[in-house]
Length: 227
Image (cartoon, rainbow, N blue to C red):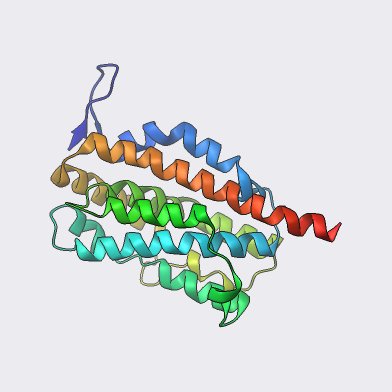
């Protein structure tokens, strides 16, 4: 399925439409909050842990939603891949913080808001989940290996603390990324509501920016106390 774009030029695929709609927001996300610090190698371990803790509910909501729609036309093609980042995040948090990480690391309102929105997107035919799968999974596949190496170097994290960036069962991540992008286009073709999917992509990036800034803000008292 293709999506008509506003200037009347040739229609584009759903994945391309999501890219065009979120391109500026993507740049803003890379320049905001804790994500900016991580990419510049200036974040600390606590900041990365807090970000992981607050991304987890969104991944859980997305993966539960995809599982529920595994027989839904379109969405089922995405559920088939079983990329399942939530268990990897839980494993990393336990390696980073110990078994009590759920009690020790707070869930911020921005993290809760993100998860609630993903849960809402899974309702009905689940079409808007396509946007969240695009934002999270294609993002993980695009920059995950780079970020994994950066975190290993800047935060001295061990492989057991970075399993979030591993995709067991897939030896060629470039091929996986290409195949998953095609699956997103097929899902968009079958699910309908293409404009809603594209706008949900913008919402997903805004929620990511809000969470990144909230994590950075939550760290400020700690930074001041250390001065």
